[in-house]
Each structure stands twice: as structure tokens, then as C-alpha cells.
Amino acid sequence: MKNREFYSPLPKIMVATMLSSFTGCLLFSIFYSSLQVPWLFTMSVICGITAYHMLIRFMSPVILQCIFHRQYNCRAWWFQQRKWEPEVYRFLKVKRWKGKILSYDPSEFSLKIHSMEEIVNNMCHAEAVHELIMLLSFTTLFFSIPLGAFPAFLITAIIAASIDMVFVIIQRYNRPRVMRLV
Image (cartoon, rainbow, N blue to C red; front, side):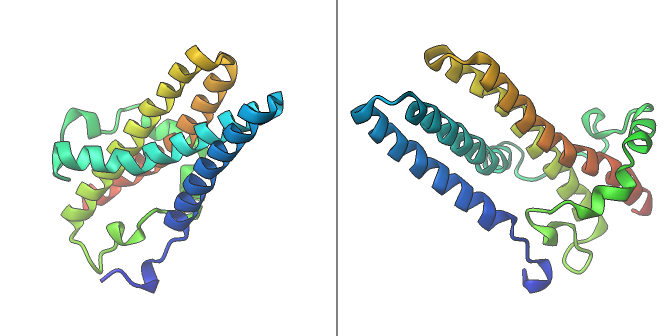
């Protein structure tokens, strides 16, 4: 039942980014190995890390699907909004920008397809996926052991985790409102 109404360009953008980054990593590595020009090595690393960040975005939902089978307890401590969160969301003006962020699969949050309970469960899954991605973003620091440039890997990990934090914030902002309706 996923149709044009629920179209999102995000999956195609992510696949294209991952494939082009992987290809770039491969090509720059080949050119570096024969030419030994330092900027080719740098480009290879940049493309490789970008491909890795895209890969963990595809693998995280699969990992959580295998562990939780998309069944979450929305009343569990982890998914409960903390007392201080609403104030943070007001400060960040989440209400203003949350609707402008692309969703990977908008149909997951549609009342035309899902019940309110299913939407709450999908929100928990989306939050867990983005939290896992945030955690896995820091595994790129291990690449700095053989490659060096720890600050560069740390900065990219922080940026990647910050991007996923936006999606966690949206889920944590919206879920209590949807739960009240349930």
C-alpha cells in the first residue's frame, strides 16, 4: 500500500551516496596505490568513511529487527520522556522544524495504513534505530588507529551522531502526544 503519497527521496539519496562513496573509495585507493599522491589517500578515506556511515544507516534497522522483531514496549523506561525534555524541545523550537525533516518511510507514521498503537511502536523503532546509528557512528574512531587523523574521525562521528540526534528528538517530541491520543 506504499504509494506516491508516501514517497520519500531519502532512500534513493542514501543508496546513491553509499554506492558512489564506495566506488570513490575504491577508485581513489587504486589511484593512490599507483601514484602515491597524498590527497588521493585523503579522498579514499573520506569516501570510505562516508560509505561506512551510510552502511550503518542501512544495517541498524536490520539489527534491531533481528533483536526486537519490531515489537517495543512504549511504556519502558527508555522510551519515556524525561521531565526536562519539554523545556529542551521548546528551547530548540522543535515544533517549528519537525515537519520539515525528511522521513525515510513516511508510510510508517500514517493513520491511513497503521493504527495509533502501531504508529507509537514505529516511533519507538525509529528512535531505537537512530540511537543505534548514533552509537555506531563513533565506531569510526577505530579507523583512526591504522589511518591516523583521530580529530577528523572524531569530528565526522560527532556530526553524524548529531544528524541522527535530530531524528531521535522528533520521535521523543511526538510520541507522548500520540500516546495521549491512544
